Image (cartoon, rainbow, N blue to C red; front, side):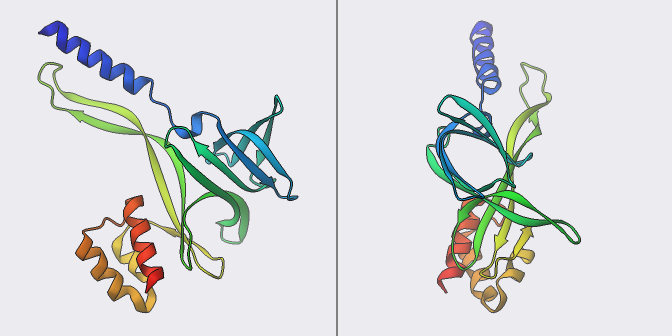
Length: 200
């Protein structure tokens, strides 16, 4: 029995250790530069550094968010197409720089996201291993709303803050969230909420 438990634990450990994130590998796709040139190849993104690396015709080249207008990939891990735009965003009181945002949902009110890999504490209740806490790497998303005038607003994930974006429609949105038991800090639920808002 002990050998079986050891095997299961090691299998789990190595599966976690071998876990890959989308930002760590290259994906097929294309980019459109700020000069409107289209380059196809294998793309690897780094949203924290606002950097895009491209392998094109055997050569590797890096582009900052200043040099890119748009890029799209077919994510091997998520098995889905993903779209990213470089959009000027205010990082200080009066200073904007181009920043990569993923377009999660597009409409009158659009949902944007940025991601980063963070370390998360995990509590273990296993009596065999003595319990305690460990850490694992996870993807943390930061969400933003883009309105029809091009204004980008950071969203903290709080329901009260979300409703403030909805103006005169907030009572309908509030009821929709309640009826469907949605979480305002979950991406899939935020997509449903934003889609509902745009439909009314």
